[in-house]
Length: 320
Image 1 (cartoon, rainbow, N blue to C red):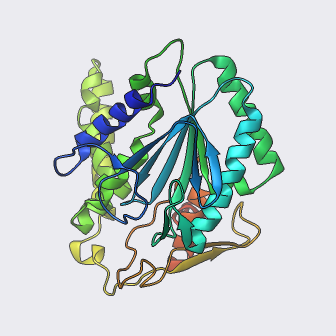
Image 2 (tube, rainbow, N blue to C red):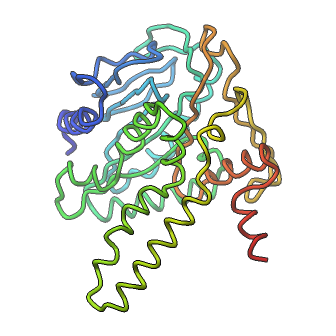
């Protein structure tokens, strides 16, 4: 039995660690907000989004700053048909969110100014049989339809009577939400570059690497490796001037076709100026999904379109 108040407290605690200001907890559910504190809603029996009824028990976390609408549900062995029904309903909800006018929880009308909301569904299992049953249900769904890629699905598995807190931390359910907030808080292009390249963190790890060896010859080799890595990082480190784009350009949409594992046309609408109901411009886009669903392909296609060659392709060509 999932204790939703306990789950809420766990997530609020994780938010509190990285929140830039005093975090007082989740607010009552409100999808009319386009910025601010995340809101929470516990589904006891059912909840309605514009005529789409989603059955409980469960919970919803909406983070307006990064456009994540996260559904949380328990999963019991034998819930395969419920998975199919829930995915179908959330796909319909996703279509309505992109269309614009929707109804909020329990039939309160409003117009959504956030067509870029990303829907995620996370189930919680407390037994190995339930976990394996969920895996089978999702695999069957992926074989039957490609539309499952339009939403993010995953499961938080509590192992051997494991508590909720370590299970959530191990799964990383909060990692996307909190790390994204951290990234959006960067003030300089240098911070963005250091995060993207990971060179800084690797160099920090290599500083202590030679101390792992007692043999003097092995230690010298480790020191040489650390020195070589530092030199290479300096060689490719751009200047401050190179980090700052000469002219701001805003991406409104991206269409990919016949690129790696994307054969049919895939169009991602990110919205032009004014898509939020005012003159604001979308300055960050979040791609979220399980491994193997094409996130890296999308980024590589974007790099290929902008620079004429992708980093992966350049690496392959240099080896040849």
